[in-house]
Length: 266
Image (cartoon, rainbow, N blue to C red; front, side, top):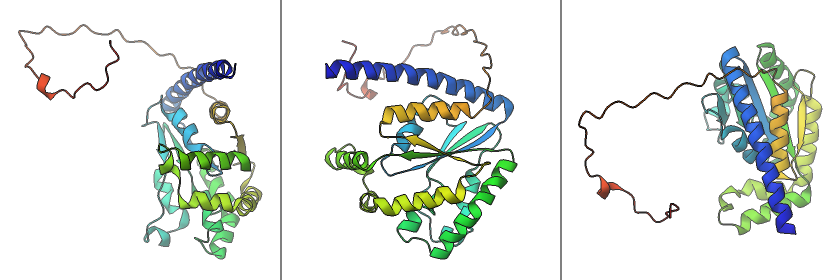
């Protein structure tokens, strides 16, 4: 019965994901037609499923419209720049939606908790981030801030899965282990961040991510609700007939083919 129920849930999930991904394509067409600009921030607990949600959003749309930005740790030069300078070059132009997999809020989270920034830098960030975001919104850019939240037991389960599954071990970092140990330090940092940066012009929205599939669907549905998009008609083109061969004969390239280790045609 459990397997039957799981199959039914997976089927329902795939059906709903398909419908939402169709809507994302309608949104994409509208964004291109109107020149709309949007920034979507994906923040949250380590192992909360931010990357999986981003993957489901972007896998059926154009990467030239929905751009994902996941910046590495800052270089020595970048550490001397104005803090927001790293992200501004990646901001959207007309007809683009930029998805930040972690953002400037690293300063309020991992940098603060792990001591990668000074207390003065942390306090200055909290004091100025709301004004920074108001400047973004005042320029006509949509700013959507998502926080993926999970409970302690779910995080432990997911970290153990990363340790045990060879396909997931690349996901496990020393920072993940520290985030597990410092659960309450990160909780306090999250609370302070919400207090300082939840505003009418750039509010936070929390996604319950204890169930990954529900979180993905809810995140996509919410993102769609943040745009006044319309269904722009797609005029289906007629597939043209192929040109005549004019005597063309293909050479024998059979020696260049990769060996068929797998063949599902038989």
